[in-house]
Length: 564
Image (cartoon, rainbow, N blue to C red):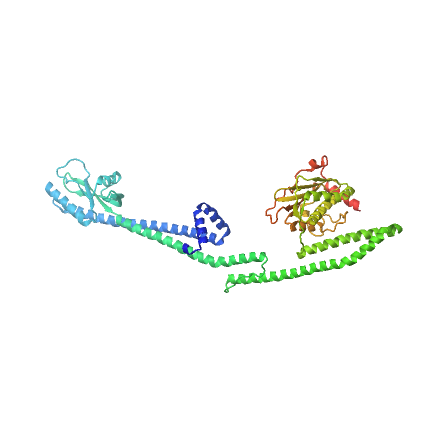
């Protein structure tokens, strides 16, 4: 795509990304982790490039060796023919004086020039003793002292019947060099006092080098073209496979987000189309089941709400009658008075349970509204502690307030926050085993937090996960002493979330329990951090003085014995 055809904003963003070259490694690493198409394409190109590189190198070496060997054999054959013709010329000539010998050597030179296609020929007398009849050395075509090595000379001198060759670098006349081969063999001059001569013929291999360069260049061009073709084919094939997968992933994310009407576009009859139809069938089934469950949940919510509302009128009548009977229970006999007292207590408990059920039904229906007021959480906690002081005294628990912060007003629903604190403090009193209870209030610029810490039996990790479930109790055999309904913590969690806050719990067997309520100062605060740590650490001795941790098993056995 032409960059000028892009919108200006997108073109500027693309250019900015190209300039930020330092981020390329991170970008590529991110694509490697997230994109199956990019990862597969990169692996395919890398492996294909490696295979093509190995094949091209092997072919280049094979062609180079074959071309050199064929050229070497051609050179050796040519040198053998030229040497044989020169030797025949020497053997057939009548050589009686030095002038005739020189003429014969001139004939040899002419024969070598005619029989060989090389322009570089040299002949040197092996015997260095002066001789008046021995013809002079001859050479033409370059400086032979730099082209013939001592190793080649020694081999030619040692054996006159063998043809020797060596690869050399020949000067090209412009200060450079070209590859070549020099072939050496002996010539016998049948003249007294002359002896044998070293004959060297050098051949230029620049034409073979040019051919080899052309072949190698062609191989590299073909290799690059093959890699590009493989990349394009791989991209097309991967696109045909990964696009449906990406569509399925995107549709799955939409389904998970609640858009149950999303479906895949299915085309064809292949395996991917079959997968798409199966996915759509699964989505239809899930949508139908979720709709059925939602309808059933709605019916249940309406049933609970309607029943709760319908029960309020007869419950009010029963409560009034129970109050009248309870006010006159002194005039009844002991058995009737006890029955009236139990009736009055259970009617009150039933009224509380009915109120909690109505509150839960409002949460389920999504009809809960906050009534925000500027409230000091520290002052609110102090009021709740004062209102529950009598209950704490009955259980032998001392409630201590530690409030380094939380005095500045924050917009909350005071009724719901007070209900959260009452629930947390009531649970701490009931399960605190008569030990001190610490209520902590603190704040920072983002949040206000309230913690309720008791030093009772504590809970196991599996119990902590269910502590906010409705009607759930950590110890079913342990009876409630303050008339709870089992919905208090669930309602407290709903109130906290309604404010955009959190309600978390920490507990350890024998060390007690710590609930921390965190409320944001500003709506829609992300990554809310509580000013009060959830895990109090080893604070037993610091708070309780000489009090030791509770023996959980012994305390549980004692509580059950007390109930029986």
